[in-house]
Image 1: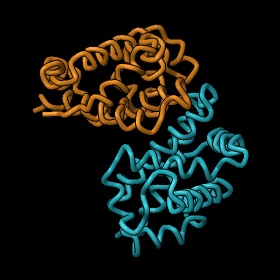
Image 2 (image 1 turned 60 degrees about the horizontal axis):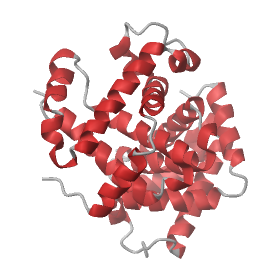
Image 3 (image 1 turned 45 degrees about the vertical axis):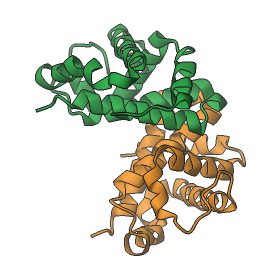
Image 4 (image 1 turned 180 degrees about the vertical axis):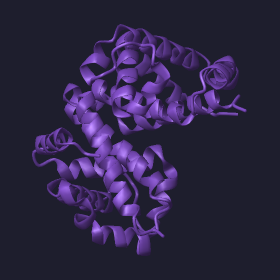
Length: 143
Length: 147
């Protein structure tokens, strides 16, 4: 459960990205494809080479969705409702735990690389909890 | 039989040479206990684990973290033989410590984040990919003797 302190830390961390959100998104995706090749199976229609426009574009989308979620931490279910439908009925990404787990890990790495020491254990914990909450909402309608 | 390319071996050795095992180990274990508080159940005799500050400053956590990461160093010296390297530790974690192997995966991922925060830009995607492979294999080797 996200505490008030967690929510504050998440918003602060996001605030520190100062305009780099899109790069973070693209980097997180690229890291995910590099570290977990099976995740590429969901993007056969993409040019998956490093720095491709499609990875950048998709990274931007992912980060925008997360940014929206962060503005609505008290109501994630509603904020992510459409994405939840999309993932459940259209995309049918395998039990959301796995790919989202990998994306969550890579997003954390991308954040840690940028923030260094500022990616404290408390921030790490808050972001981890947030990504778990996002994954849970996206999984709500799977069955 | 695991295959390591020359590049992967170089990425592992190159980074490991710069790691402060004591600091990094302490940090990784502390983060495990903070981010996944249920893991504290394995350390009930460690004393004060009541807050992130307490955990980070706890000398038993620091010492154990160092032990864990030192063992990791053994893996790195024996990349081609992880199964044998971790055979006894696997039995220990199953028979005596009763640790769910899922926790090895959690600690591995946390170690990656600690390395990322420490090395920042130098922790490139290629570096991460190699280290994710390594922590995955270590976790697998540690789970191997479970029954």
